Amino acid sequence: MRQKRAKTYRKLMSLYSMSFGFRQPYQILVDSELCKASVDHKIELVKQLGTVLQGEVKPMITQCCIHELYLQRGQQPAVDLAKTFERRKCNHREPIPGDECLASVVGDSNKHRYVIATQSTPLRTKLRLIPAVPIVHINRSVMILEPPSDTTIRAKALMEQKVLNSTASTETALLASLSTSTEPVPRKKRGPKGPNPLSVKKKKTPNLLPQPQLTKSPSKASLDGKDVGSGKQEKGEDKKSDDTHKRKRMEDNEGDEARSSNIIMSGSTGSSRKRKRRRKGASNTSDSNVIHES
Ligand SMILES: [Zn+2]
Image (cartoon, rainbow, N blue to C red; front, side, top):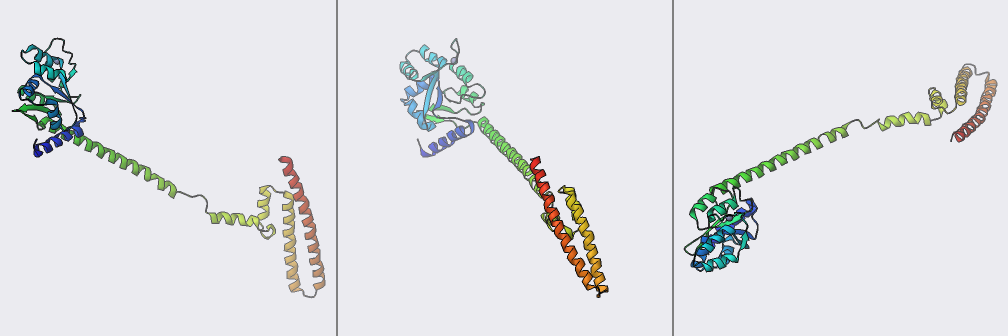
């Protein structure tokens, strides 16, 4: 076989396998006339089929086709050849002409992916109307694989378009899914991240600071439910601190009465000590309460 022909056949078989799912070993339905022709031209049929289709081959013959050979006299070599092939059950109870049998086996879609090896020109023209049917025939002792039929080429184009459309649709779907999945997530992230940590700290710090310095803190402490008594004490302290301020003003105004003011200041310090003692007692009671609750 010439190199150019080998290349075209290789391309053709790759088309059948890539686009229509043909797999090796290729199943080849051989008709009775081709068996006779191969015997007449002394062609090694199976070997030639292998070289033309460029792969493993599995020659087959239908019950009707082998029956045609049995009926003819002087065709023993062809019968012997046909007997080496795998028998294909066509389920024709009464044997019908080989062309009709092969046409029925191929059907309208060649779903079993047969290669048809036939010498019948009417059958070949008929099979050209069915997509993806590789056709082989012998012409003057040369085995020929027909170029793809128009129906086959059209079917291939249609399938490719379908594949393209499907991939395009899947791509668009993927893009859509990506866009839908990616868009809302950052929006959610951009949402309120809770209270400003700095503002939270500012709120916490006044509670931690010594309470007597702020007028609002005692009320908050009472709300927290620590002890109402301490709050009262602090209120009293505030009053006293106001008194001390007043006294200081008095001192500024009346510098003569320094002794009395000193006495008052010492008195105030004493009262603060007393308060500390009271606080300690209050804290102890609160602790005991906590223990009881737990
Ligand atoms: Zn049949």
